[in-house]
Length: 451
Image (cartoon, rainbow, N blue to C red; front, side, top):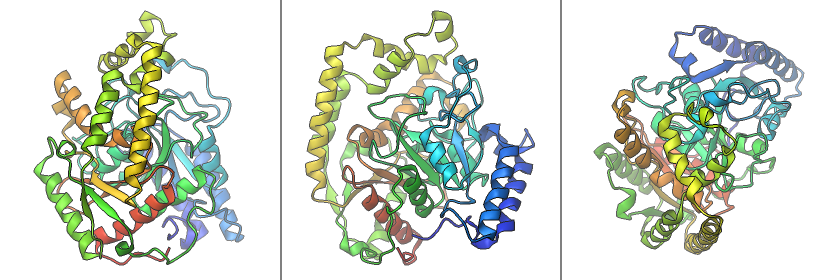
């Protein structure tokens, strides 16, 4: 894959200039770009930019991320910073002593961390609204939600303040904001990126992934995050969509409530894939969804596990949590250990069943979310908030429950952004990134770059 465009093929001086110009924008608290961030690392970002510029001038660049500007979601530890995780109740927590492994690896690769981004409280919402710290506007229309929970990560990229946003994805928190903001997001198979130093929502489902403008940027970030430098070897061997087995999910329930704009964009995407030589077939996953419905009937992993994580809070502290978040946590306290173990077993059964299905395909395609970004003020009503949150999470959370590597790609449209989601077989992250790259090119109507 091509190198991320921001790296200093453009000259070492440009690294410092790019950071300086962005910091000048972020110095104005009234700018919409600033609303994506809780903290700006002005001094250290300039120091890192100058160090990167020196390495490039000496021919000692550390790799494709050296000189790229990154934002970090405010649930990752950075030494000396308080990891608030979007929650006022954590504002008095002690500063982190060390960087999260994900942050450490990005820094070691020469990435420039420009700041910490806003997020949904405890990462427990796909909407991105945060009543306490503020909600970043969608870069396509600041009156609309950015999606969550990695709201600021997506906004920081969409507003052009950074090249890559580091996010987390437990039920869609990378892919939902990527879809709503017209960006690319990637959720890896669990275990590929260490979770230590990331405030947990659901250790069963939590993953760490990037949001960027291109698949190449996401792929290079994932190679660093997963410590797999050979993840994307240069090769032309698979650079044709016609060689890959693609399926389009036609099951009605993944389209329930879909806006006409989303359905039209999906038709556009299918036409572009066929024009590029792909021959996708229709796939029904009713059996899989029925099994997951049984799992949901037992309980929800994020509610159960976040309830355990927050069990030490006092009643006064829980009152600091947004009621629309807390109301989703409370049911987790009622689930017994026996039921929780049954849920884990049912999930293992469903993962095995999905693995058998995926043996016949290189990737399955479906809408990332069935709607475009709603207006922020349309979600003031609690029922509208609940309904929209469910719609946004419905398709993406399937990939977390089944532990599938998954990406969201923007479908070109003159309207509000729509995302196309890919699922690959468990552990086949490289394949998903390769296919995402090919499909990205097909959607743009251009030949794929050399891999």
